[in-house]
Image (cartoon, rainbow, N blue to C red; front, side, top):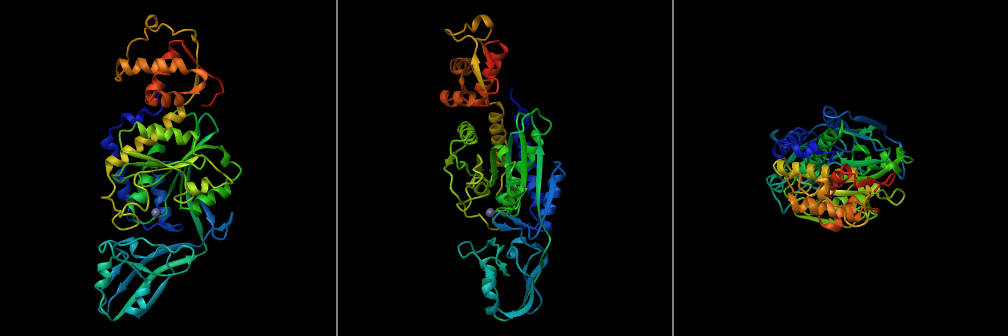
Length: 440
Ligand code: ZN
């Protein structure tokens, strides 16, 4: 039985609008790896799902790293000699080098310039830059804005603090029948960038809402963490129990108009890798499956050799390959409601595979059982007689206790949903029994 019917029934357009509204709501907040921006973001997610917010003190050792100081910012600007704010943090959170140390000084343009970052190739866009682990201050602005700066003195102000505090992350654990877990991890540390990764935050939040209250085989763990340091912090605090994660997905850049990309786990042949590739093959959109590489998002941490968890990364356009990446052009218009909704649907389809990927045994394996006399040689749903009967024959033939439903879906070329429906009907018809204890 499909556990995730709710997602299928939800009107795609309506769910897309809802996801896009959430992206727009989160967009203005100045997030960073620590500080009140990420807390404010987590509390908006908490209005939708019962998220637990975990605070870890600066200075806490986490494996080979240390939880950094907490960064907060109230205001920042560059004022010209007449007092006009020629660069104004209130207009874009990207204008400040993220994690800038505080500064308040008057200086000449030539003294200021080494602290300015622009994009020559896209002269109207503001770049997104960070300096997390090296104390520095700076401003990001459009190249045209910089060209318009006349010689003279400028008042520069970054009203920020970088002091001992906490790193905050959000965690939501949804218990299922088994203590085996499915991990969904998203980075929540970028300021006003929509695809990277408010898209991931919105889709993960909706997924949690859809899964809550359903009868689930697996337990689900949702993590909303600052990139790298957040995932490392979580792993350091949960070193002993992380092995309960049987399958996992990092979600990022899932709102743009590009086709899907799935980066496989380090294992490469894990069930999540096969399930995701299968769902993408049947999703009706362009897609590509990529091999694991040790750079990218937090899959790097979950797939570090000490853990080697079966965690892949689902994206639409791949980071660094689209010009809007890490610039002010990754805005709410760059993210499409339809694309967000389709990403959500792909995720629910992947979990539907994992939830239902059992092995069965054909109870009438000597010759083909006579479907007609059991009233099983006619279609029940919308797939048409050809697909439905074909799926039943595939399931009967390969349900030898060895092949999982995903094995059968892959081998038959039919969708997992068709195979799962066939198995359900055959089980109800007394022709199939689930192999006890055989988890896929
Ligand atoms: Zn990024």
